[in-house]
Length: 384
Image 1: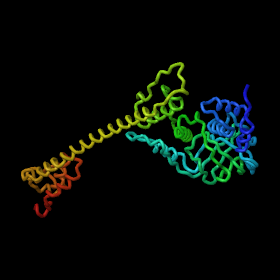
Image 2: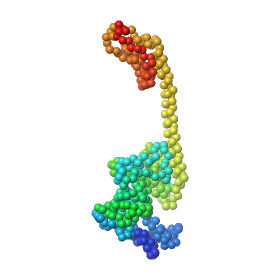
Image 3: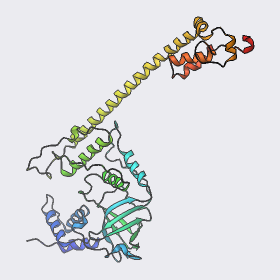
Image 4: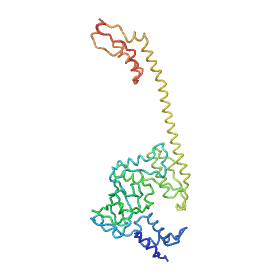
């Protein structure tokens, strides 16, 4: 027979404005008492229930606290005379363009050859005005951030719980301010398994009508289900954004025994971090090799360029070349027709340009040096 929930525990929950279904509360008490460290006092038991509530989907145990058809309500006050606890089902920044938000996510991801970001590093989104979708498990209501709300941001996990106190509702929208909005914390792990940024990027791509990223398939192996999903998401993200081949061993499947217990699985984080470090090191080595090859090619070009220039200058400075190519004997017909640009019948500048283009057509430096050897143009009077 199931033992009833102690009255002192129910009073603690009611004093902190948690309205929870009785059947869920009873099951939660049994779960906590059967654990390895059962609560010793009613207060410990109440704290354990609240912690489970914050990390569970409110749809499974929440009571109806929002008015029916709240989206049509106007000039009413929610959370009066007592506060109500709701769950955040969606967060969106409406004061910044969706393209800018998507670019922020893409820029935050490590590029090819870059090491992974530290675990504690957070992405910094531009902050203007948040729009929240809140629910009690039965009805939904929209809340707009009228004044900056502490404790919540665009990258906050879905499923966190908030407390609304005497907040005005206009045309179905809650005017949220720090005085009537308080973050309690928590999340729904099953919703955030793929990562908050992955879910946010998918949502932005959907809104912008862009191609969505495929949902990664978690590798099980010796990892728990949630951790495997996160690892697969990171691997999938690298494959699409860092050009890792799709047949990479990061996606190798692991055979799972039929009696494998995910809850009892141990995660070797040191092995995971070592693998990531090895991958980053290999990528950096490939990048360094590519840079060395590029530097070597540049060095060869720079070493050969002075030799080419010297050869061209030597050719242009030879008297025989000047007499035979650059300056053919002028005739009366030369004075009567415009200058031509082929060797033997034009100005020295045109002939030198012709030679330079044949030897080194793309070298502006050589054309500048060739001006040293230009001969003064012969006028019609001098030729006559």
